[in-house]
Length: 431
Ligand SMILES: [Fe+2]
Image 1 (cartoon, rainbow, N blue to C red):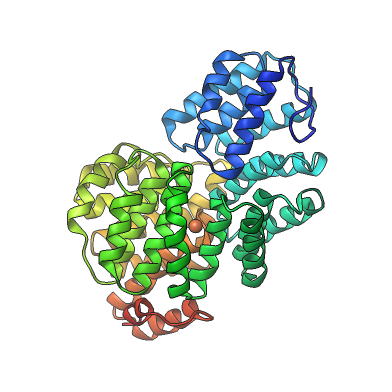
Image 2: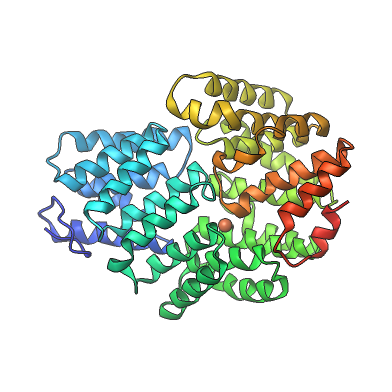
């Protein structure tokens, strides 16, 4: 049978194909209801594309628990007759499951090279670029997108991805044009709104950004929880650019933290916002216990160093010394392992950034600065987007200042604020 994009699928029930199409469309739009694939997986246990999509659903969760559930769906496929594309997707998902992130993204790229109509697989690749460091992988992400443009040029979900790829490469004009074009085709597009918010914040267009992002909030609350949380996080960051901590915390309480506190995205966005507010000058002591309670058990799970760096800061700030040491021990073991991912990112850079985050959280800024000195040029490879990695740029700046290395701090500040309209936050961070 053929799916909605005309791709061959191994199925004999039109309702199963419709369920797979529904999941792919919701995931591409970051809409609510993606969990419908789990009911479909029970109803059609012998339909490979349904099992593959269910595995992908769980892999996005990025916890050891859901990783196990993803594995069950991948195993279920092994005894089913799959076509070539489904086998290739199975292999890519198995690599992702195994934390072989670079090989996983290569496998996904190979699928869209042969089947350029497969926009769902391009969406999976976009997430793997995030895991591998989205700014670090920006040129590769953009090349992937350009290769698919002929097949999807008027597709609003494609345009939202294309806008983000352009933004990550610093091409803000193209990013903004594509995001606006996507929103012109379909206003319900939180990923296009997201790309636009990246452009507005990176250029320091705070007032305009606040107006646009506030206007997006009602729609966002009806979209998938991860993007509702994350786009609200961008709005809170814009308030922080004005040093309006009260407004940032109103967004925090209403849209970011405490709605689905066991979702990784919500934990990371909450931690990053509070950490940034602290670096802007307002301690957030009262917030850390509830966050630490939700992250303590998973702080040693090693999917990408970006996540652990957030977790250990939260644990250090909450004074959870035992959980912090346990997490650091697992990070050290991950960094000392001899697989390719350990050698690619954990040993050369990730381990140091995580140790620095823990030291920074514990108040040892001079140690944080020394740990970050050699790794900052490749820091973006630990995962996260350009805007998310600004957290570590600010932490490095604050560490240099606290260590009394004022000339280094001033030079670094000039580098990270180049090309951005100066905001009250920038002026606060300069000292
Ligand atoms: Fe973002």
